Amino acid sequence: MKINAISGQDAVNPRANLVRNMVEVSSEVIKLSEPLIFTGKIDKLAPQMEKPLANYIQESGSRMVMFFPLKETEPLLKPDDETIQEKKKKKPPETIGCLVVEQTSVSEPRPHLKERSEIVADHVAAGLFRAREIERISFLGLWKLLGKTLEWFHGRKLAKTLAILGGIAVVVLSLVFIPADYRVKADGRLMPIVQQDVFAPMDGEVEKIYMENTQDGKRVTKGTPLILLKNDELEQQLLDARNQLKVKNQQIDSQRSLLEEAKQKGNITEERKLEGQIEEIRTEKAGFAQQVAMLEKRQKNLVVRAPIDGVVVTFQIEKRLRNRPIQRGELLLSILDEKAKWHLELEVPEKRMGHLLKAQKNIEQNLDIEFILRTSVEQKFHGVVQNIATRPVQVGEEGSVVEVFGSADKNEIPNLRIGAEVKAKIYCGKKAIGYVWFGDVIETVERFWFSFM
Image 1 (cartoon, rainbow, N blue to C red):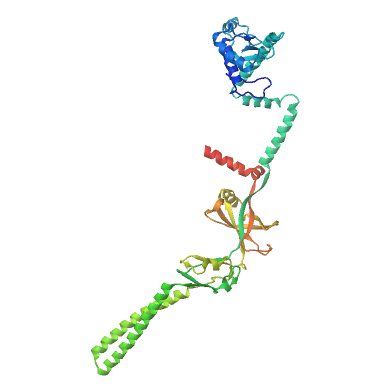
Image 2 (cartoon, rainbow, N blue to C red; image 1 turned 180 degrees about the vertical axis):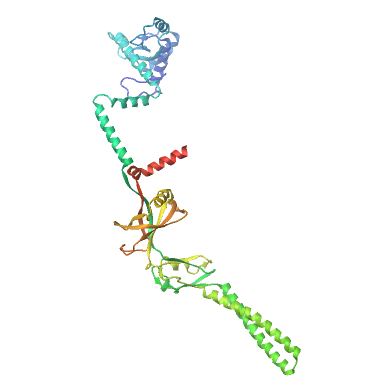
């Protein structure tokens, strides 16, 4: 039981003492299903009514109060079957609420107030009963929406509805059957085709950086020294090998002196023995000589030289490499030949590759690429797809991408700069214009539906 509305109040506070006392009295009236009229005296009331009514009168300060139970209304059109009528007569109508009418000025009801209140109670009961019946309908919101929709197919609204549906049909058919160019978007950069990374030939420490050669943007020729490495272990090995070689030379000279003395004395046995020792020392000497040559060759490799003609593109080499240990195979710097041909290095999202591969299979010639420079969006350039990587790679927040390489004519591009960022569109044939415009939405729905199924 709750109070739904009080005249003159925008909202009902169910925790207020007045409202709570009113609920108690109204509940008892609904149970008894009989009207209750208070005109100043509480006697001659049912025992269960006295205390709740006294509390309400004290809290409200009313001089006269009437409680009218609200009962279910009978249908206007009664069935002709007398048996059904008899059954309904036997079942009393259900009490569904209570109407409270109060006076604060005098205890006697104003003329005709009781009769008018009974009429109002009948109207309120009918409205409340009807509202309850409607609320009990399943999927009421859906039926209301269906009813409002069907209204558009009657009377004057029919022509407007047909015109709107016709327009929608034209739009839908246009989206389905009108073809348009479908292009896969990709980000990338302009780079020279000839590129060479320079790696450390062995472990060591950067002893010297040839600043006149290794500055960012500096053009170098093949064989130009770039970085000098130092390997203390290699130097020690070379020193030991040279010392051993020197010792073997001294041993050979010593044995040759002894051999000359043996020859002068005619001691054949000693002569044969010394010749064998000299030959053994020569063999050892050859091994050390070979070791020295190999170590000297490795020492020459400590001077890192430019493998090709080109421009050094590594930034802040001095800061990155000066006086720090280097491991074999570590990337030192990169050189690009800006005078050779250039190409596009594009990163296509893996989820778009199906369109690209399908177009490559259906279109006999290379796929066209249209791209713009991020620094110069007013001019468009063109190229073709030349090569597609065989597997995707992970690139930061972009996720899985596939590298696609395309042609680019460096002579047509003004202010050409290594690594210039581009935004490209790869032509993938004709598709319905609706798919061209809303392809992302369609693919999202398809993926959701597939995962759901």
